[in-house]
Image (tube, rainbow, N blue to C red; front, side, top):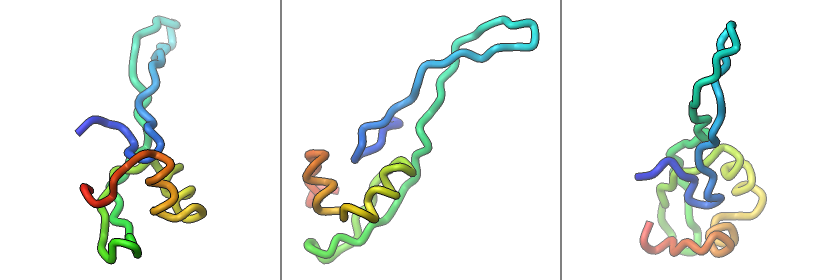
Length: 78
C-alpha cells in the first residue's frame, strides 16, 4: 500500500538534508500516517483506514460518511 492518506491524499514531500558543512542531499518528509479503525454508523461496522493525523482531527468534525463522500471513497469496499 502506498504511503498516502486515503481521505486527504497527502503524500511525501521532497526536501533536502543540510549537513553542518552545508552539503545538500535529497530526502523525503513522509506524511504522519496512522492505521485507524473508525466506526461507520450507516454501515453498522468498523472501517480500517490509513489516515494522516490532520484527517483524523477533521474526521471528528465532519463525520466519516461526509468525509468519504468528499474524497470519493466507497466505504463498502474498505
